[in-house]
Length: 277
Image 1 (tube, helix red, strand yellow):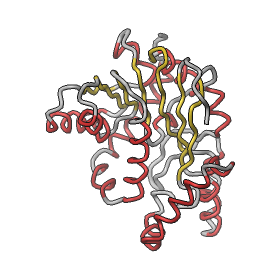
Image 2 (spheres, one colour):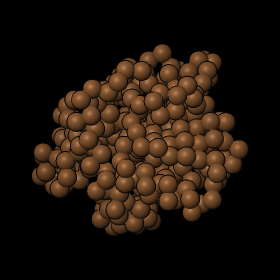
Image 3 (cartoon, one colour):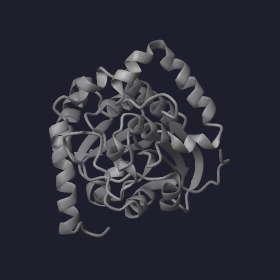
């Protein structure tokens, strides 16, 4: 694999610093957000549909999912990477406390998979909550992921969606036009109103193009009607009504509207030509 250029490292340095500072209270913020927890559990259930002897998580954060799968898949070898050294430290601490011996974590980026793991290949690679939105070149990242799969291997990938119509409408109603259309720019600033994150939002078409050559097994949209996890006050006001919006989102995933949620999740397979959904 090609070495990482200095310009690439400058880009990734900024992202690493962002998540280093984000790591401090990452877990506490997560456990206060039931919508975020519900989405994560849905992502996990999708991963569990596919048997795997070896798994890799890209963008593992504080290791929530690494340890979860290490426990649910004790016979599976699980590895994780994250760009943030602080996140990796927290993930390693969680692994040590769990006592799981089938999981390891390393600091790194997608472009360094060959350097980090040599000729290792994975039956399943998953990315939760849009870690691939922060890669510098999605096409190149896709190639690295393809090269890291075993024959018949599975990719379960989530992305921050470029065309989140519900969010655009909510921000327009709040007269926050700049935020309403921020995702449409070539560089998106991330979720934080006070910190800038170099990143990109992708449409369904862009993602399918980047991962062309793989078989698309499944495509799902999240937070189509249910407000996104970061609309905390709106979700609190909705209360129990949130569960009905979640169920409506499930129904809307049988329509073209699945393209317009806050997140999109794709399942791709290398070879084997599975049935497409």
